[in-house]
Length: 267
Ligand SMILES: [Zn+2]
Image (cartoon, rainbow, N blue to C red; front, side, top):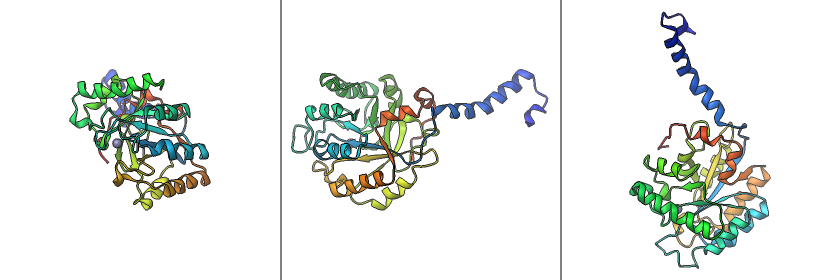
């Protein structure tokens, strides 16, 4: 070590050494155990009715875990039960063993909210969960993938451990703060992108997938057709992927240490 040969007071030398070594030590501790290759987190946004009628039974058939991010959309309105789940159906997903996550009360983009209003949007979904005997969510998904540095302390204070954004890249738990978790969005139109992303789930990187309705009659531009969705599930099964809910990342990640990673708000 060159700095040991430079004439500096001993405490300063030690401080410099510590500054050099600390990031290495800290990063090493983020993981409780190594991330296996082919680890995929499945997430479903917007409380679309097909999550209860089509997605959940298919996931059960394949033995996969998943997180459902719930909000009450304004347009088209959440009261339209031809398009969205009822809270009874959401409670049923929890009973089936799936994770229920928070996607804000009204799908409000967090960069348009001050901390008081973000807290209120989070609390609305938390109160609904309590009413329907669903555990308090620890996972969050940013509506419209819009992030904001100001949202992080609010999410942290409210007990959130994971918050999924967009970015179309794989999640590196040693480099990405779990409150700005990158993911890919599955659509009917991006098979090449998604199969390419599935191949990147290796060497410590995790693929987090965002899926909307299967099908999505509320927001057809984010549709995934049931046939394509099952094609992906079959691919995951045949190729021995481990498919989990976001909260299951706690098996691999020391969340307190991971939350100290400097957040990156871009691709
Ligand atoms: Zn959404």
